[in-house]
Amino acid sequence: EGKLSPVIHALHHEPELDKYYFGMKFTDQDRENLLKTGNLGRIAEVQYKQGETTPVFISIDKLTNEVVSVRAEKIKIPESIKGVQLDEKQRQALNEGKPIFVEGMTSKNGKEFSASIQVNAEKRGIEFRFDTDKKLGQAQRGQRQAETGEVRIPKTLLGIELSDKQRDNLKAGQTVYVSG
Image (cartoon, rainbow, N blue to C red; front, side, top):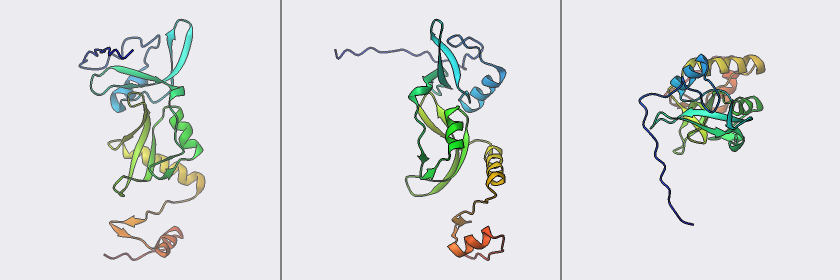
């Protein structure tokens, strides 16, 4: 009909995590995740309708401190992000609401960067987090290296572009001289 209906959202000093959220009570771990990252870190089962559970992602709205959710079925995890192909384990972790550390992504201005990514209910999509513990990335890197036996060699080292030969030598465990 073309009618505009404003919705007013109250500004909270802090998120209300001690209250039930659509029939779900947050655990201590849930509260810690929400306060630290703004995201629950898992799929939650809530009751929008009596007796009917719905899987959702839950996050905190950074502007209002409101708890917000989005149905898990509404979020589609892409096969690649910023030029990096995601493997099945990474996509599965994102589908479960977990954060993953992704290296070698390319920004719009062409610079390579790494960040933790996670589904954010408020944004209704993937969120990039740069202020995360480097331990998360290091742990995932170490696990991936242990599984595949492969070490990732960067394209640039301290601002100097490495040739394919230098990268191959580094992969082979050899010493490489870089100047610049």
